[in-house]
Image (cartoon, rainbow, N blue to C red; front, side, top):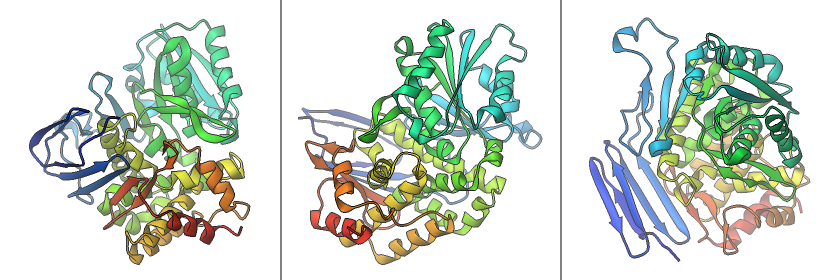
Length: 447
């Protein structure tokens, strides 16, 4: 079996190549931050230091996301509509994440990423009435050679299945779309996942664009190329890694987002601070009231910083061989809640919030973090009006049986993302005392 070196330290301003008989790793790093990356067959530890709290990050090197403005420096003071770009650097499959207000009113952004004459917009019966016409106009204004088809799916996690996916294929085939067509995902995480999987599969792969309209999708699911559908036995067990041409985050779409959906998305924002960006977490503690009040500047900053964190990890570990798994803090417990309680009964972020509390509780029982982190996590989740305990119907056995088929199980070993050390540090490991897991499950379940 291939292994990776037991320890790897990446230093600023250096190119490091690590070789062994089993694997070759190349990690070019060209910035002033240091990254410690230690691994074993069952554990990966990540320690990031040096992020600045409120300032823009410097331009990244080849393997890192880059943040920039689509404008000349001379125009920066007058053109406030120009979006911020965060780049996901994957070589010849790199793509930009555009972030800003009113981007759906800037047709050149979408049109530059459509290479054929046929477009299929995939949306749902909640988002479609709000934004479908606007997106269709942005794709065709001044561009009469492009023709638009659309398919409107039912809204909700419970429809993220093969039957609903077939509606996308039906429309594409009936419309005689070819390999130069582009699929456009207009909606939240469910639409993005299904549209992306349809694009990965139709004619063995066509281009697609993400237009996320929820906080959850804007800060997490639209970035990184994870696509797929649920199975009755587990969440996201069927799918593919398939990257979009671009992600267009128009923050104005959050104006129509229900309060519950807004709060759900903040669970993923909080996650980034806990696992790798302590100063971002501290910023959230101070600014959660502004985020909940939909302050435009606070939302734009939280989305940008989250996308930078996600893009950096994806650039280093696109297909989740180790490092990217750390982005799943709380998800193993959370997915069990979604599956056991019924898809759509709880929003994804609500389940992840509880899963995060459970992962933090287990980390504390293992002696890996101090109690101040536990209390801070509970406090910020309550600020965001997110749940901190699973539904009463969830039992220990339900958790165990569903977690046993989690995607992070390897050779029968359940690996978890847990916090370890100071805030902003985590491990992805199967090397933990099973007693701690049992104690956590029993403390949160009534039976």
